[in-house]
Length: 141
Picture 1 (cartoon, rainbow, N blue to C red):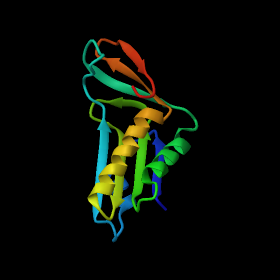
Picture 2: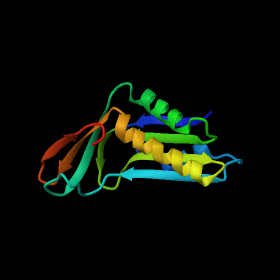
Picture 3: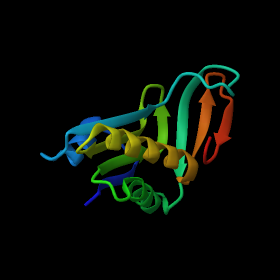
């Protein structure tokens, strides 16, 4: 199975869980990506203190499709999760692990997964600033 984990989660994401999900003796490379909440944004007027993520009910099946399309005809395997709910600065919003026989393929698939998530996954975020100001960001935001 090329997509071993594709999940929308209300609980904290574990990088170790994702790496373990793609572990295999024929994999010479494992790449990972962790997207975290940062304390600033170019569009924010002040410090960012949280992001609140909301997902469409079909988001998990779309995430599975995104991961499968990124794998394509390669030998890569993917584990990917996206958080929903309120996340504070430093918390992981997205975790991706990709294993493959060769590093180039693992890096390529990992990058395609995150780019497709940003472009196509129906997850929206509300950015919360220290002064209470909020702003919604949509797909690609």
